[in-house]
Image (cartoon, rainbow, N blue to C red; front, side):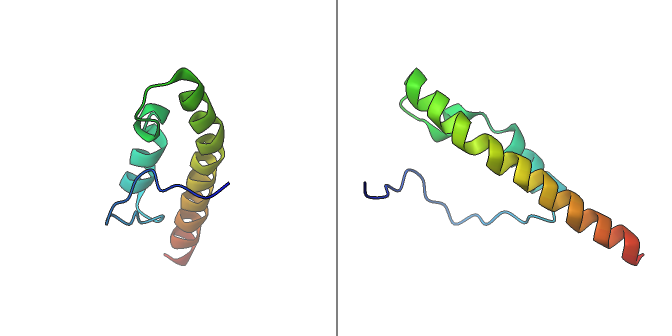
Length: 70
């Protein structure tokens, strides 16, 4: 199965910026499944939830390092 580009943007989120992480975490799966098909939304949600958890984990780790340095 060939990879398909579903969305492209020039925006590059900053994993150390809380606002960028929060925007990603709060973004509903429907945004990444523009057809609105329930099966597609469920598949996107299944794939994106671990990425959201990882984004929060990385932000927390970076934030902890920053706090320890100050």
